[in-house]
Image (cartoon, rainbow, N blue to C red; front, side, top):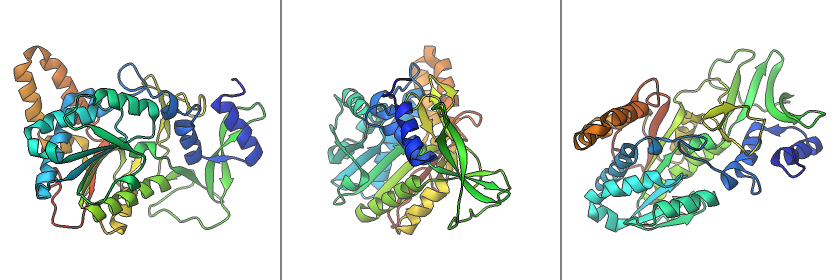
Length: 360
């Protein structure tokens, strides 16, 4: 470990200022300007550290593109609409979505395409992927930078899991916060810090030894989405892996080359995530005056959008690829793969809008 490594810098900081919250640790590991994972070395796809649904199959992005077109129609087909993607990865989802949207040229003509991406390496990848897109993108730094003078259709696929949570443990003597400390040898380790008071009890049963996660960042994201779609009108689609009801559990994980590794071992060199807390995010949206859908499993949502019919069409035109397409379909929709753990929900403007895929 060199003196300038992120691990060394975090160890020195903790030794000086005290144990760090799990949320602060994850944020530093992902976004430290010098050595943060997303700031310096995000690796997506089969050769990288993890794979997302758009990289599993073109069908995912195509269906999201058609979802956006249908949402636009249900908003009254406005002459101007902002299509926003938060955390666009390497641009694959949006490239596939725009290709599918060619079925609706008026939609493409109305588009102002906005990408929200803090990572410079990923912005460069998105620019390459969308270099020949029908609608050129522009990048902004935050939701607050998205103008409110036209309806917004927003996509956030695997964004919530990058917004970290603090962790709390119920002990026999009360609540304590799980924090990241440092040993005498400079190694990072987990420990508990007692909470003096003011802790809000969770709205579910918790036994001694149980761990709960509370993400102020996820709540703030839901609030900001609610304000955006309320001010501008429109809908925000959230797809992520996580929980659709409150409950305990430690969901912090680190992935490197598709393998789980110890989260404290190599800060900045692995992707750190925690489960999306859909109840918290949707409740935050409601508090702004926006409407929300319930949660659907990703498999059910994609089936409602027509993924099985799309797979059949692809197989009919490419019979030799039939087994591969079937495996991709299973990966995205099967209960024991991404179909149940991954969920979809929407926050939308308080008006008579029925969000596609969530019809009763």
